[in-house]
Image 1 (spheres, one colour):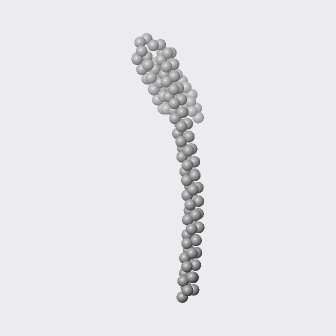
Image 2: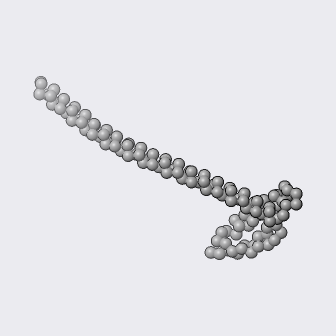
Image 3: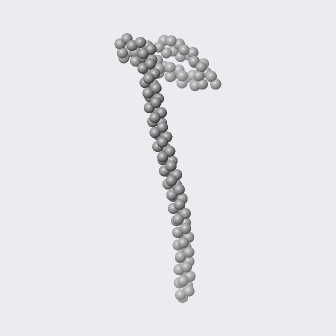
Length: 120
């Protein structure tokens, strides 16, 4: 569903169509406006276009680093899942061994009982 949203960035109004919730887009625009204004205030006579480009580069840098971190986290999670799967398989194998050994113990105990009974 397309939403129409009006935002103001650096004194200029923009009409946007978006699939996002309007309040989300408005908050993004406010954040962008604040970052551009902050950039212009921090440097003497920096043009709005330069400030906008610097803010855009900073945003792209943050997004790129976040994606790299996300990729690292995904790799770690895959490793953890693989380790857990291996551990689960090992555990199942050990459970089978335990069950076999218990059966063997019962069998040996029965043989021992029979042997003791036959000796009497």
